[in-house]
Image (cartoon, rainbow over all chains, first blue to last red):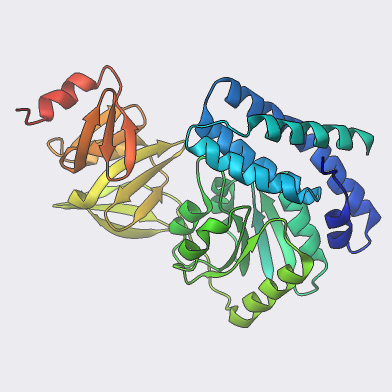
Amino acid sequence: MEQPNLSYINSMSGGDKAFEQKLIDIIKGEFPEEKKVYFDNIAAENYKLTAENVHKLKHKISILGLEKSYEIAVAFENNLLEGETNLQEEFEAILTTMTNYLQQL
Amino acid sequence: MNCIIIDDEATARAIIGQLCSNIESLNVLEEFPNAMQAIKYLNQNEIDLIFLDIHMPDFTGFDFIETLKNPPKIILTTSDANFAIQAFEYDCIVDYLVKPILPERFQKAIQKAEATASKAKTSSVSENVETTSGNDLYVNIDRRLIKIDIPSIYLIEAKGDYINVKTENKNYTVHSTLKKIEDKLPNDLFLKIHRSFIINVDKIIDIEDNSVLIKKDVIPVSRSNRPELMKRLNLL
């Protein structure tokens, strides 16, 4: 499976290490909250709200360089808007990968 | 250029802030996690450029733009490329950045903004109260009384301290209450069908179970308000 990386963060920080750490800390703080809201909404089968959560999470997926995962998230968001959950398993695997990676940082 | 950032995601605000800090001509004055806070700020401050997220809960980026009388330059920032065509219907939007924003692309957007920048005084919704005159309703927006043709109103929605008045042509966000505007509207045309919604009964398209379709909006009908709504309809 595709693995996260810090290429984007490094490219946009202009070499500012303090900013890189600050951004990682913000992501580490914000990601678990967004993930929780996602799991709450999908458990409640509120797919419109879940689609909004996936939309929000897409940004962090792309920040962590997960290009293929981003495409899955886009497709899953569209799924949800049509009331379907075909890609739920794949999407949640992405969240697990991101969680594990952020824990190591 | 003095600018502000509006995005409900802290990560996005931090990235845009950092990208701005690399450009000498940009001065980030404030960041806001939602549009309502920004509206209050804009009532008292003059700025040149807004970095605006589209997808925000309750009040989208486009809703926000609709509240601005003389908007400054706006650069949209979004994870969704699908709104690009809609974005360019607004003269104030100078560019459309898809997240994650790349530094080179960001710089290009700033160059566009600088090329078109003019220090337009920003104004937006502020103090409120409505007055009526015949078929017109006047709403007080930024110390100007704006005339709204009452029959053109199809929906009024309560949003915290504000109401969103939707008409055939335009939406208005006004600092007021549903109760105040309800008192100003003709009873035979308008009906409160939910604690957060007043509708123009003439504009109903259909009714299904506990909701009403009015234009493209599906509006819930409270159980307590349903009998009055049914009474108003010319049922076969």
